[in-house]
Figure 1 (cartoon, rainbow, N blue to C red):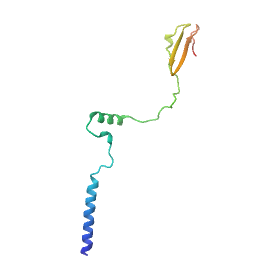
Figure 2: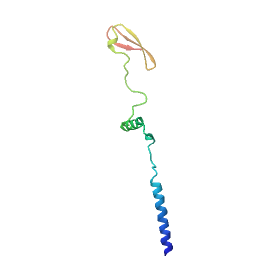
Figure 3: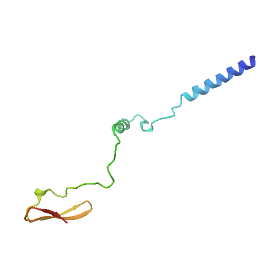
Figure 4: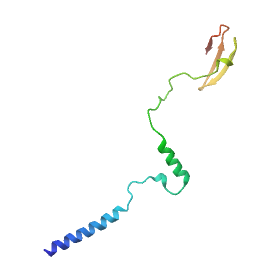
Length: 100
């Protein structure tokens, strides 16, 4: 009978030592907060404010302004380099603007 009690006591003692050892280990740790650098902390707080949502498509769908219509007079032609292309923007005398 005393053998079982000593075995149980030894088991509880070893279990208590193991739990107290493992309790001190921080298993999940954010490595961005290592050190006491204020910029690291500021960047961490800034990244928490950022919200992820639905991203736009890789290739934009829509129109891009190449030139304001007020910058182009009647019968005038302007060269515009944009979006990796060369464009010729011209206005006819009937006020319609075309792009080649």
